[in-house]
Image (cartoon, rainbow, N blue to C red):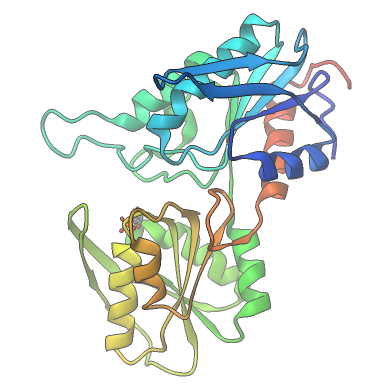
Length: 309
Ligand code: R5P
């Protein structure tokens, strides 16, 4: 893999993303750039570049769980790259937050998804992410004015399920998961079903199961894009067990796991597995190759006339 349309590409890494950055640099044959990101004793953020970025294509790798704490230092680093002559600055964000706030659900709220995208567009020239939660906003281009590419973990998840689960029944906990569930099931040549979810609060969820096949020896594999409070997966797992199914295996793309959610879900499942878009003990499915493919796609599509490396 190489980036023919980017000039002397360099990856800057926000703290906590070092392992993913090393994998990405190796796949893209890009250099790792040096930068210090730290906090002053009073909590304000400080960045210092230790790399000559003049005329170069810069990628900043930063997964954006806990975005409120990460955003400002990330924007400072992008500003430093810009002020120090970077030709273009891309953001590789394996997890892109605020995508579930894609509507005004009650008077006085805002569509945070749009505001967050606008902040990123002010500082970056392109974006690559993994399975953003696109529901009421259909495409990244509806909210991003910069080239933005979403890569999909379905292939990697399906490969993992094929290698590890002999007879899977792929189950989606809610209608929004259908897009991932059906794709993964067809790649695994397995049957899929999608349950119905009613969410009445941040941590209150009801799952209704209709049209399920008879419980048999298959292992239900619950698949969702995000596990946050874990209530969706927990209630779906409980419902399956009440209906006589085996304890499910739970697979998520993005392992947010707020508070005690991970432990609570493990108590209900045979195992909990996630992609490494967010560093977490459940990470079992690597996505560096997907990120590299995304960077290649965005650089080829958006900057076809760039200088050759
Ligand atoms: C929403 O539809 C998403 O796909 C997930 O189902 C949801 O974000 C999971 O949230 P929680 O873990 O808090 O139930």
